Length: 456
Image (cartoon, rainbow, N blue to C red; front, side, top):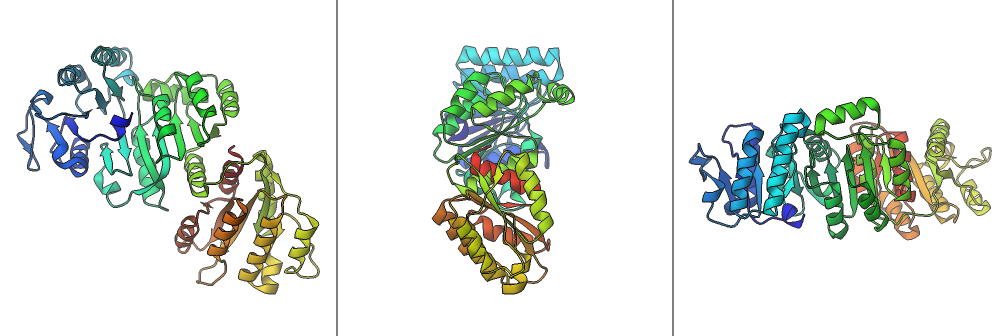
């Protein structure tokens, strides 16, 4: 896997000069990332964008670490035979038209796998978008370069997606919103050979990967997968597609993934401390939160909720109950500290409704003292803060103080922002740059908190 994700030289079998076509995007990406160590192959082109092309992979004069194949499926076996002669041992097949298309495509995929095994070659794909190494700026994918150049933020989340365009969608979503720190992005498609287990083994030893997030439609080596997840402290977050009958049929036509008993998988996820999620946004939310927080998972998750609305506290209490975590019982000392900022007529409780205290003392001092009180409470393991953002720039919350509190007490804070949409992105960046995850929705914030605090 290291050679797939950290190659020094790459060839592209199927290089294209047709503008705005996937083959040309691949050509552009590999030219940008590998320069003189990139070797395009096209029997009908002498040059593409001024770059010398080779008629065959056998004509390439230098050693090639990885060959990327993007030609019609029926031509792939011959390309693999030539790669074997060239002694290329890592091949990424990004072409579609294999097992996902039915019996004929399945036979073609099996032939490719047989050729690879005879040659001691590892195959990635087919029917995928390849691999991206953000730290090394190596993009072995037909993702449009306009979507990633100048936008990658190196980080600790590595993503495995059993889909091509979905991985591009993930990246576009992440790169055009709050910066999302990524390490590796892997689209594995039909998983003829390389699968999530191979990549999980690599990520567990990869110092640049701290959180592993996966979208998979099948698990062929479930026991090995769960043995690995049990062996590590790195969080593993999984979205399993095809858990319903309708989803299973869709997965079969997408990547030829066979259905598995979802109840068995769910029990195995729990035993192996895998964090299971049930939606795309949730997968990204939880992975980002775990990477930002960087705090160890705790035995318990007793939550203090700081809100500007009594109704918000009620709804969040229900969300917390659904997630099998609980509201903290505040100690008498904590309640006494809260009384110093609350009006005389109001008795503090958890959830902590701050609006009356805001009216009495202002936002900044009230929130600072309240956060200190609940963070110092030994019965509080995590804090969920609801922050209202008005349409004018007022000094309402001390973000540096919030960051100090979470570092000092080793307790996570997750924030839900509600209010002016124009100001929310900037405040999100302020908080997340300080390691405090921000949710776009109240319920999603509770889910993020559960993952950060308990790893559930």
